[in-house]
Image 1 (tube, helix red, strand yellow):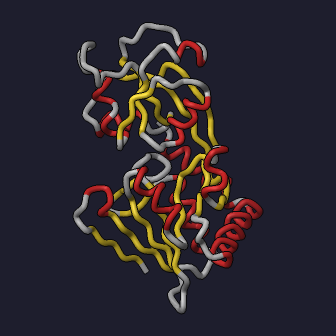
Image 2 (tube, rainbow, N blue to C red):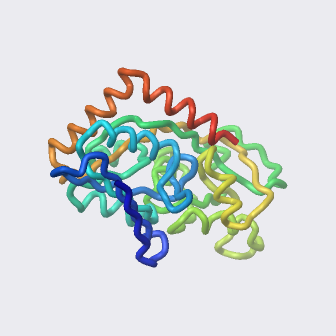
Image 3 (cartoon, rainbow, N blue to C red):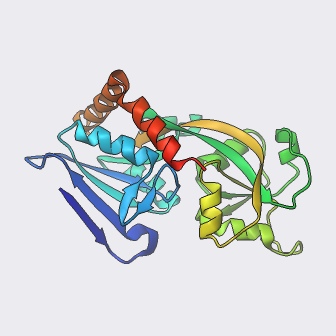
Length: 252
């Protein structure tokens, strides 16, 4: 059974429901953001590599799933507070370890620094990156990852779509940035949605496995059903098959 609603409140407006077995089904809520190709909205429904993995996990349980697409900061905080709620796609960083219960990894992502196409300086290491002002989404793992690498000259935004235009502001504008940290697979789509052209990657800052992060208040039986489903997908080859097919489909 599929059910979709739009409450008319921006990113927080999108909710989508999936139930493959509705008889006395327990419910689980999945929160995510617009971060293609891993998770995004397509034709009014959640889509992407990670979404396909999670949908297959649900098919292997008797759970009723509800998906919501929010801005990252809201989703991150809600997952910590709400019961029977999971967040994806989430980097498993040391400072987050005790905040969630973890399943996965469900996929992997490369993080890159993006600049205007006429950016001419060479960035060969983290020390080079520290010289520049970098745009990032606050509470996003990429920002936390940069700080852990002592890259701290960061300008924060609530959503990623706000960041690319800041590369093109006048040099004397305090909001101007030199670089933007994004996902290798996502930055071009974000730039297009932000109506920005003429950007390029200049440095791969890291590679992170991405997980399903569940609230500490997720019931043990619900969590164990999801974890068992993910493990069975790896054992029978379904996980590899879905990842391979999705990467080919979403490759740029």
